[in-house]
Image (tube, rainbow, N blue to C red; front, side, top):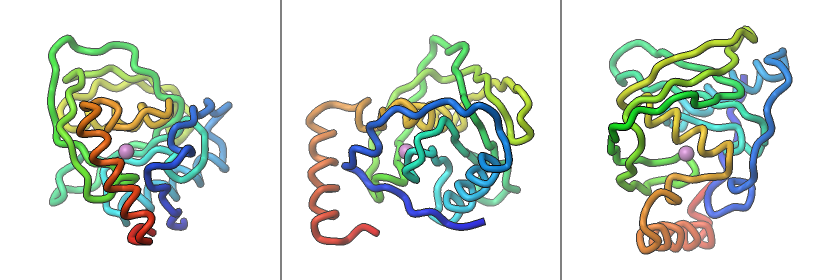
Length: 172
Ligand code: NI
């Protein structure tokens, strides 16, 4: 496994839509493993393939407590089949936006269909932090970022900060 370099915003790479994978084969499993290692090393609780400049519909998440055992999900072609009407709000961050956070509202629960590490179809019901995290990562696959859910004022503030940090060479 290897640690991949994470694309930092603003970057057109992050705005491009990702394509479904045909199957979870050895190549995709390797990508999933590398992404998981990259996510844990960052550290973060979710990562989408476009964040490592690969436009395939693959995400990895682990929203378990820092103190408990790891419970990673490696997901291909995720599809939200149902959302709850009730809304949850979390202070979200993103590995493509180091040190930037904003409150984002999303459906509290989602039902997601996907293909797993063994190329088998799965469906999960997610709530709490896991639900938010999966929705945030699926957004990445459609070129949508967490700052696209907040006010333009706040979004521009964060993007200006990111541009400044990039110019200063403060992001690797
Ligand atoms: Ni993100």
